[in-house]
Amino acid sequence: MDLSILYRGPLASCDYDCGYCPFAKRRDSPETLRADRAALERFVAWVTAQTEDRISVLFTPWGEALTRSWYRRALVGLSCLDHVGEAAIQTNLSSRAGWTTGADLDSLALWCTYHPDQVPYERFLGRCFELRDGGVRFSVGIVGVPEHLAAARRLRADLPEDVYLWVNAAEGRTYTDAEAEPWSELDPLFPVSRFPHPSQGHACRAGESVISVNGDGEVYRCHFVSRTDPTERLGNLYDGSYRDALRPRLCPLTQCDCHIGYVHMPELGLHNTFAGGVLSRIPAGAPVLRSAAVAGTRPR
Ligand code: SF4
Ligand code: SF4
Image (cartoon, rainbow, N blue to C red; front, side, top):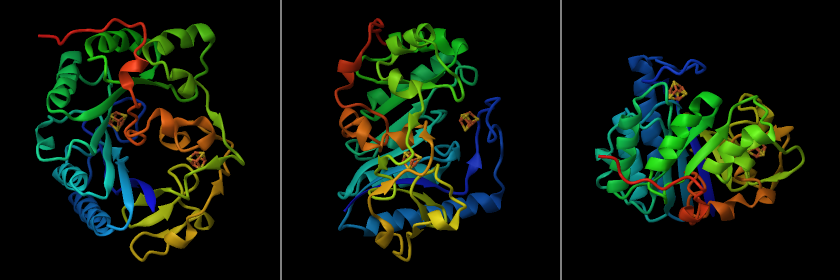
């Protein structure tokens, strides 16, 4: 069986302070951190034992997890397993890249979000080049609000051309064609993010070959269909009860507006677009996607 898992444990803290985010500068208690570590180690042990399956993992923490040693170790360990495809994480890239030494770089991948008001530009770009120099696969992205446009253009120009820069439509924002144009020039796939995708009654791999797993092993189809509704629970990872629930499903929600969700809707064909990097948002043939933005050289 091919299974993609979006994992989110109890950790809910971040070293950044984005104004709109409930996890900004939040600190977890020592008890929560211990519980998060134990849950993650249990999850990694479970994946390690599933040698009959082909498994890909994306860690989607509330907050930032690469500041925690257990996530760094988990990614290195998972990447080295023969039956693991992608071992990926969403990160603000505040951590240095040295931990990636020892990982299998065919499997390890990072989904990096740039927050221009939280980190000096040169530091963020330097982190990208650390990954690049270490041979780590990654995508870089930004939220498409007007105040980010200059920074996004600068980043596109300075990043190597085979690094994909994605742009997320800002939540709740409607883009006129004129407003969308500069973002589409930076990210040729911005039109996919620009509008939420109608999904009610549409096929989705979530609940069939993609699942969402909590720290306690509770399994739901995705991060968006209610994870508190007992009728939507698919079972538990650790007692194997989720497995009988895996089957083709139709989405119950009106729309799906997040890449980690709609990327799994077959009608959009995005598994082909992102072949090899579905979870980490790295398109197949990323250089082909380069827009008219000018390719930059590595800054000194
Ligand atoms: S980096 Fe992400 S998790 Fe951290 S405060 Fe900003 S939006 Fe929230
Ligand atoms: S379309 Fe989106 S919201 Fe609906 S089941 Fe799939 S991932 Fe979940």
